[in-house]
Image 1 (tube, rainbow, N blue to C red):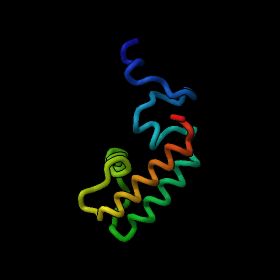
Image 2 (spheres, helix red, strand yellow):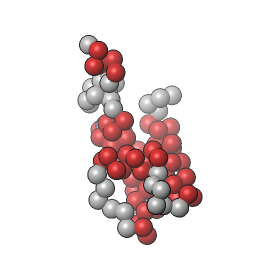
Image 3 (spheres, rainbow, N blue to C red):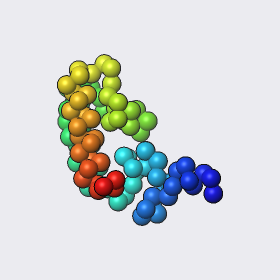
Length: 91
């Protein structure tokens, strides 16, 4: 199936493995995700960022936010990279 070759199934059959699935939904990485989001929201607390949609949260995790300081965006990206590494999904 052509669609499946573009968006393959999650290796643990938890759904289609999209970026959103991997970062925010896959039950296989619940512990790692909880750690990531706790640390990210701790950094964002002084800026009033809370209750973000999955789409906005994904953008923030991957690209930062132009309204946030560069060092904060860098810290968020480093946390995202740490999440990717600790899941072992791509290594």
